[in-house]
Length: 617
Image (tube, rainbow, N blue to C red):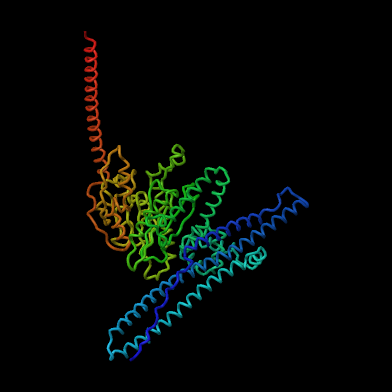
């Protein structure tokens, strides 16, 4: 009797105890290093007061120098640890991928072992030789897999040991000073080089990628605001820098609040915008069910921009590697405080756009000064009141168009995909944001593959008379409007208005279907606003969301014929019908009031008659 030796099952591959989410630790170290860097620079620049002399001045200078040196040592220590953590997180990402592959191989080989056991049990004598060959091949696969698993855990241990060694190398003040002395990075020169490149995203990307990791980390620590908001720097590095700035603001201002200090108006605005950015970052993890796998990037963070309104952009998915990318440009009443709401729309679209074999990234881009209004400052002229008044002009849309075009150029420069397979990039402009996006396309040139204008008050400018004037690839200008979206009734030529309605049939855009939205009246304008903001809503407007998803994927949406009635005529028709409705409503109300009064009067007379009858002898 022949015995066939069957390999034993390969044991399960243990879970990693670390995850890419550990990058938050890196951000914390980087933020601490930035704080230390600021303190060290200030101490170095400020010695004794100018009117101090003699021993007192010398002692003060000495104290300042000593503190500056100590804080510089702490900065160097935190910087080294941040670099080590960053490297470790990258290693964890790669190791996680390796583990997944090993798990897949284990599942396959164990399945084949089970299949061999079944085949042996059902075999005949003349099949033994073939079964022995299968067993030997399986044993070879098992041996290689076991060796690879052992090598995997060896690399896991090595990565952890390297990280621990980085901590141990700078865990004393003396070691921190030694690290600072060894650091020869000329941060001022790097800063000047970056500034000198003059906003050329391609040149900036080439320059950044040529730096060493230590040089990049040094700049992210010393100048996070610059690095995080420079177009052309890779998205991941911008995210690192901007999260450093955001955590600095949150920590510093919250510490004041916790200490019982009253924040100034400017500080409160800064804190509100920092918290809003954090809320936008948290959109996936606060979803139902929570999503902890989506790569979220803070691509723009300038909480003090535009007079304190703030500029911010949050991406869901990595636009540098995604197959399909969309930039969403919001409209009026939006600023840095409500980026989380815009983020929820972007995240919803990103989740819809992911499909087998293709990745997606969507960006909520509040990177321009949209007309906005702060109810607390409604009477602040020329402040928030004047800012909201700018909605009747295209000035902010024109300025925003230039910023949008620059941002898109930055995405193109940092795209890591092969040049012949760059990410398919769509810009979606909503409301006043559609006018902004149209100005980017017409005035500057928008390096996008498609442009979608939704709920648009006009496609901008007297020179834009058709889709062709937006200079997009042929057939790649799309538009949609809910029938009962009152903002879409504003498009017109002339001094008042923001250009042509892009959903008009003769404009030449591809008009895709959207839910009409319920009719509304003047005493229920909230429904009109809901219609205007419905385009990303999977419940109230699934048609629009599905069509936008198709556009982002590079597919054709469900199209419908464009409008043949002038947009302004739709507004006039609503106003005429609304007058008739309100008059009828008022008449009905008056008749009812008369009838109620008559009934009340009749009841009163009846009551008096009854009273009189009771008194009658």
